Length: 463
Ligand SMILES: Nc1nc2c(c(=O)[nH]1)N[C@H]1C(S)=C(S)[C@@H](COP(=O)(O)O)O[C@H]1N2
Ligand SMILES: [Mo]
Image 1 (spheres, rainbow, N blue to C red):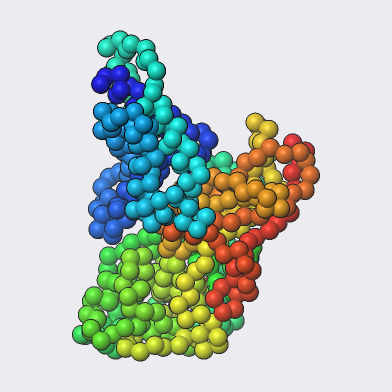
Image 2: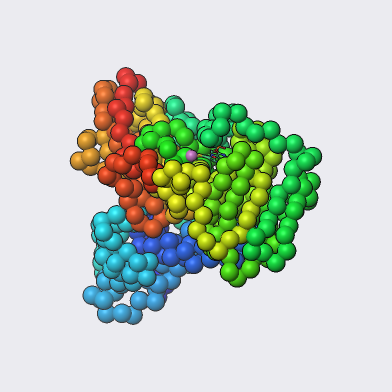
């Protein structure tokens, strides 16, 4: 049994190395995905975030997945040889099925953790596990050292995450947090309406138990949350720059709705602004986590053009739903068409998965490789993976992703490669957290937002 333990450890570390150094998806990633999904339940998410781990929770979970897989291997210790060899593959099949990707992990050919990578790893590990040959005897004194090695996956997952750091060094990359002055601005009017803070009142009325009227100071007295959140305009073209990702801070919308007490008949919110703009959002969506009545952007009170004093932030919906200069929220029991809907634009306005190449000239690195990069965003579905092609879409290569600042922020991606100086046709595409590939067919922004891949000729200079 002791020999098995060591061998299980070796295999688990081997998989961590495949993941950490080569970016190969392994059965462990499926386990991580499953656990993360379980932990994605709002109450667990809040609990984990209340703990003093911060971002480390993710790495602990990643490490735990490796230990979990090791434990699974040990459970199969007494299985007959052939079954033992198939155990990791069965493990993968079970998780693929539970995750809804289909047992082979094909899920329409667009899954974030492709079976084409996972199964060969699973079979390889299985075969080594079933017939390891004769293991060298281990001196008991060294067992402790080996036990410490169990932490290597955690360390590796860290390096794997840190590996994204070079992405920020690529020339031409946007900042992870868009400064207020660089954030795109869209509004129906030319000048922002002037709203006096002293006179400002937010009114919540309609199908509520009690009408709520709050001054700016009263809003300031409520519990705040801060979250990095990307905004993208529905009229943004493929490759366009009507997208940004700032740190917004304010009062959760659900908390305000609770203050007013939503009546059971209510089904929709009408959002009215001081510039005669109006929008609507279904109540069920409005109640979700992440929706904010924002008063601050990147730590500063909102500036006029971004909605001073108060705007709405509805992560995952196109900018048009993120009402600036918010004046009132009315709860109603019917569908309401907002300013843009009446002009033919999308009613639901759920953002499409997008990705963009931001580096016209590849950045040379000391190791002889070159790097290109950009941003990607998939709203509440999150970005699972980004792929880049440099050969006219014959081959797609996985890009590295910088762990995003939060669930609603955009992600910075980067891709490193070796190539001779020259011009290359770069194309990028993203896969969202539901395993769905970015829509390839080009469509114009009207009515549902643009789709299609961003293509850009990149120059590989002489290093
Ligand atoms: N009151 C009001 N809110 C509005 C608009 C508007 O014209 N009036 N335009 C919307 C659109 S179309 C977009 S894309 C976002 C842009 O927000 P930003 O200017 O802060 O980037 O604001 C939205 N909120
Ligand atoms: Mo917009």
